[in-house]
Length: 328
Image (cartoon, rainbow, N blue to C red):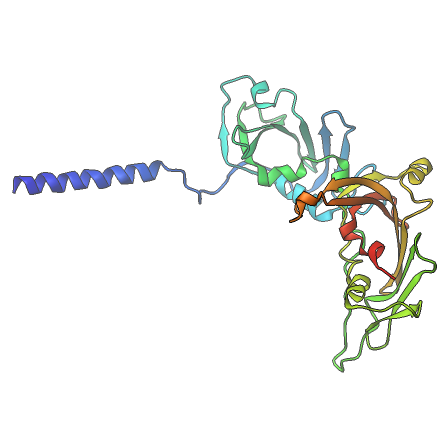
């Protein structure tokens, strides 16, 4: 009987030990802590100070100083305002070491936030040792606490960009072809497309007929394949740049990018609006690291691209520019 009692007691201790250990494990479902919350959400602006760069301001009306009349990534701007309105973090603590150890003595980024009733700075320091987050510190006239916090990298890293990081990478607005209840084509989407290239004797002209089908207007010798149809109809709204090379380029830069003698000019009429896409010279050549035939040293060319009326030079891979590969 005594042995049974001892055994049962041992089992009980074992389960108590397990419960103790489980309680000490980090709870992945634990909600983020609120480090700072803006009481007055009527934002005026966020001034961005990035080390070794000219400061710029992101305004509450989705404009950015220096990027006037440039298409912007409004979603990213809205996400930034949402982030600074309630800064949620994984941990808040009083540092035991000098702030320079956390990169907060001379931070890489300082966001100066101004609302109708408040002003405060959000300093962004170094990444944590495990690269899962960044050290941050809120500074304002009222907050004299020395506490700093760790914010998860997924919440803040997308905002740690230069000014060009807020330029939209989508070159053409989304569109689609629609049909009425009677099945008749509504005449929208891609209506016309013209492709001019250095290597072509004459331009390739396409249009959409009354049935909503892409047809060849000229040259009559061009065989219209399914691949060409897809290129003409779908490629414009899939146009997304890898990066922004330059905003408001000077005449010399436009010439250096090859736009005076472009590789191709692709003109579209979409939803009754004309778009002219100029594909300049090769910006760079990279190894195709995703190629299954890497041993053959497959290379990808990246081109300078501009859309008429938009003062931005983008860089796009040749994979996103299928018009230059249409064979005649």
